[in-house]
Image 1 (tube, rainbow, N blue to C red):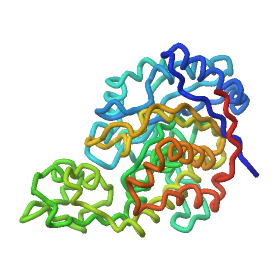
Image 2 (cartoon, one colour):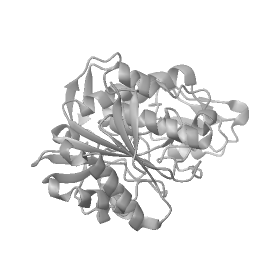
Image 3 (spheres, rainbow, N blue to C red):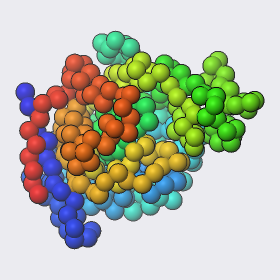
Length: 349
């Protein structure tokens, strides 16, 4: 069956018109009917790093205003990270969220996997890589999920959207670690200029400087931060196998997080950058802002988002990372029952 994906373009007339577009998108898609009165609903969102590339908090506030008469208790949530940064534990993440303006959303902020990323409940799935998923506690206990995802490129997965937001952002640190366990960075010796940036960002002190940067495989947790931050592009992985397995694990984690939940996904096709929002070396957006998508199907919305971005940019995402199969997340997602790659795009613009 085809899944419905609703789309409305960004427009050119400032924030007031954008708010009207968000309202039209939500009302025309009957989004309110996905939630039940009395629900405790997780608004799952990446609340940003020290960069401007995240969903603006004022957009979140407007979405909640539009949903206000549903009778749902919303809370903002996300999980802590493996890498060194401002989201590695709950207190630092909440400070980062406040700094980035998310108090303006008017919702309580709950870090879903607890103080240090160890609070979770397991859900069983029949995966090829995982049989149980360590779902972050606040998401496990929520009745429903409003998933707000900033669509962008990603260094290892190719791109990140709804599936990655669920599968990487919805689990405890232990499953983040397992998901990355097949990522094996190597240093291209002649490209390394011994700048030391990778040492600064490695969360496990797994890198030392000799004639070039050397990664200790016994300490490396596969988080991929060194790949992201290297200014010389001197650190690589085995793209064909490492990226494929990582993407499949993300899908299986996403399946566990959404199992038994009412789910609405919104993808924001704005500030579309070539790298993950977490990357401190982030570049400029690859195209002008496109618009907003909404669906109950995380596979369909990611497929539609990817297709639209590729069309608008003449295949920019694929050309940036030609070694990554950009179809794995959605193909494997469909195979695992996460959703459908086949969609009807309903353009409300």
